[in-house]
Length: 158
Image (tube, rainbow, N blue to C red; front, side):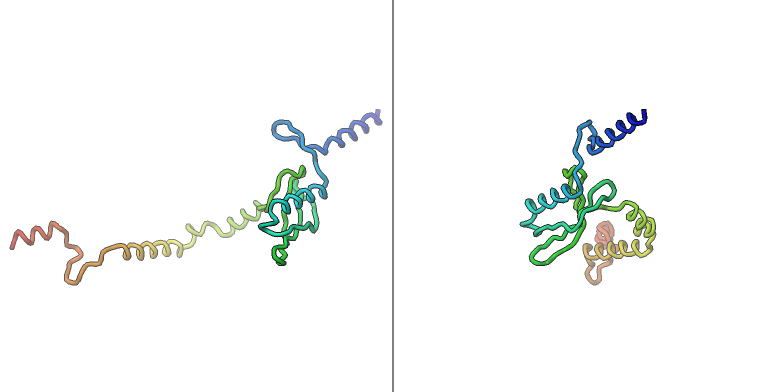
């Protein structure tokens, strides 16, 4: 009986090399090396004219994806970076955003437009300057509070 359970467990483990999509479609899980090679080949075929030659330095697993450390050599100016590829080698992620890090930054800084008292002053000063630039400047001797009704009254009394 124990032998049968072990065989079933081993057989089920062998099937774990497939991913199942939202509609039940199956995708094969590639090895780290094969997925990284697929990614680097794709980048060199499609983007090397624009960004330079991509070489792989290492590959590891991170958060359910393969993280591929690469060097991109553009005009003898090598740049190191990390790229990500899905385990089936079909999806390429040029960058990853760590949600926890962003939330920590947002919580630490708060909303500058609300909490920074200088932010409101800057907007008001900019608005005043813009309003001054776009308004007509009264000529010397003109009363800036004069309107057309005042002028009509002055003419009728004279």
